[in-house]
Length: 159
Image (cartoon, rainbow, N blue to C red):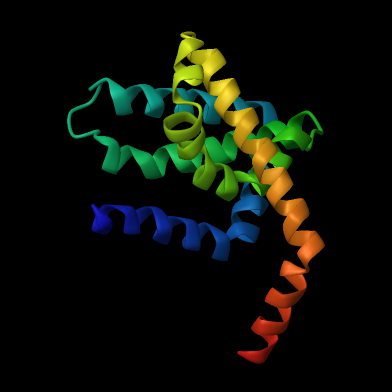
């Protein structure tokens, strides 16, 4: 699957390199139209990923389109409603830690309790909030131990 995921990375790099031009052209379109179209595209691509609406629209082909439409939806939502989505920014800062921690929470440490909740939404919230709490504590510990200062010094040494 690695060659297929290279498309996602290449597309992200392309967008990062040309973000100014993309933003320039998007300024000429009504932000509500961009928001509506990007949300509709996101929903369509998410549905077509799980249900074969169009032949050959499997996950490898649709994933880059989901990433683009979802990113555009979030950016246009923030611009349209003048919101910075503080909780999601906080969640984004901790997303790597949450990704690394969540398996230990729901599979190893609290397996029985997690699945005793039975409701998928409650299970999701429990795992997310627990992982986020542990991540927050890890970040406090890293700050207290001077992890980021040491990381910066090491980075400067190898420049």
